[in-house]
Length: 301
Ligand code: ADP
Ligand code: MG
Figure: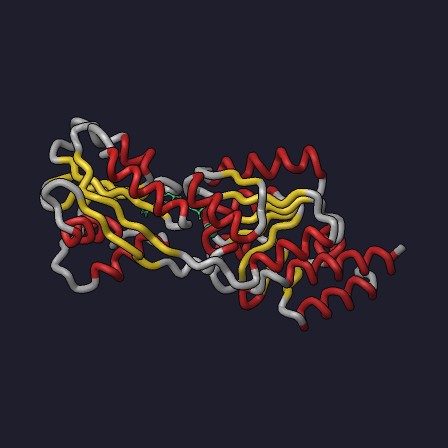
């Protein structure tokens, strides 16, 4: 049977926009010693937009945008949606044989050429080189917190590294207004370790981490890498919470002692997997939930 105090804690949470799936989770969040945050869609709004398009060699900015849109039109990733929106009604043609690789990028065949869009490591597999001047521009954009995706074309898809870079697209995403205050609050509540987990690159991740006050960053992670970090944190801190929104966060949310999902930006899988849902994406409610959890423990004793 659920203790009356737990019940009132859950009701109290619901009133404040925190949905606890059961009473055990209310108690557990009071014992959390480490918290991992996803970046895109969790610490940031996830409402990404194309910020800048840069082309190289004979290509124009429009060529870059159109090529990217031809494959991204099949993508469910926020980056893909932002690119398609920016391409608007330019005359791009949808690609065929499109393949999305989670946490890396997407590729397909458009007008008999292979088009590759994704992070530097991914695109590098298909091209002879990433132009140095473009790498420098990409790095400075990343230091400002932008996510940079590379766009390349490979006329000989059977010869993997025969491609050529067309340009880069810088994507902007806003840090949530309550993010920094939430981190400060959690530190004050005595949470010993707060980390960021992201599939995005080091530079962008560190820039966002700095803006919100997180010192420890794990970047360029695949979904299973996020789960591994949670496991390692559990060895050190036992009770570990994970906060996320994406399909790529689901394994980590399931592994965490307490999985917390963003109610609005959260994907269905994240919402189903999580133990606690933050209605209206109110990050600052995590501190409230911890407080309710601690109080329920005191009263139960
Ligand atoms: P996060 O953990 O920040 O939510 P993801 O794991 O979804 O990020 O993606 C990690 C990185 O992989 C992105 O920052 C981007 O560089 C690249 N990527 C993934 N999907 C796509 C896509 N559809 N188009 C372009 N790049 C992509
Ligand atoms: Mg995310």
